[in-house]
Structure formats: C-alpha cells, structure tokens
Length: 161
Image 1 (cartoon, rainbow, N blue to C red):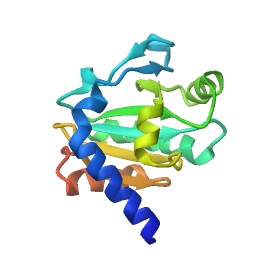
Image 2 (image 1 turned 135 degrees about the vertical axis):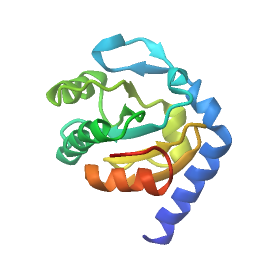
Image 3 (image 1 turned 180 degrees about the vertical axis):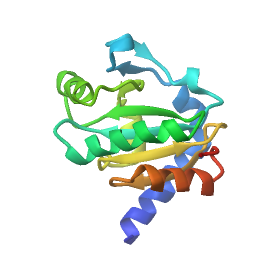
C-alpha cells in the first residue's frame, strides 16, 4: 500500500469515526425495487453491522463482489450488506443490480459521502461499520466470501459460521 492510499484510509477512518451517526441520518436515493427513487437513510440499520459495497455499471469485479456478499450473509448472521452506486446514472446502476438479482438495500452514493472519501471510490470497495456505526475497516478490490468472513471475525464485527 503506498502512502497516498494509507493517507486516504486514515482520512476515511477519522471522518467516519467522528461522523458515523451523521452519515446514517443522511438522505440518499434508493436504487433497489423496494423503494426505488425514494430518499431514505441508513438509520434503520443502526445497531447492525453494515457492509457497504460500492459498485458501478459494467464492472465484472463488482458483480463478483456482489456474489461474495450474497454467500457471506448465509454464514454471517446479523450483517447487513448495503450497495452504494457510483460512477453511473440511476438507470445503469439499477440495471447492474437487476443483473445480479440484488436483494440488498441499494442507494445512489450521496455527493457528501463521496466527497468525504476524497476521491471517487475505487470499485469494488467495501466499508465495514460495526454495531455502533463506526468504520472498522475497509477493503479495496474484490474480496472473497471467505476473506470477508475472516475479516469480520478478526475485527469482532460479528460471528460467522
């Protein structure tokens, strides 16, 4: 990991550890069928570990990450995956979700959240928040179900089978 990415990770940690509650209450537009187009927040997931996965249209690695998240929730109870769309319009992001038969809550990443990251998030990228809404760790690039499960156990986010 070079200095630029280490600095970005530190900035993410500092911003989100101090503003986790603000982020959970920030309205974002839904992309999934459950509430397409509605402005909603992540407050319903307060008290639940959240795996926030960034994706974009026409991203094969993002699609593979979605499959890994689907497998992960079968073995890790109580974890809530949330898909965050970036680098695309609503129609293309929605099409990408439908292609993978998405059942997770999905949002269009808000401008404020993307700006807090400092750059357009590289995809796939996953942010892991604990039950208190604190950023515990983040991964950039594809991570298998087994790798994510190991990280969740290591950082004591949740118990996995």
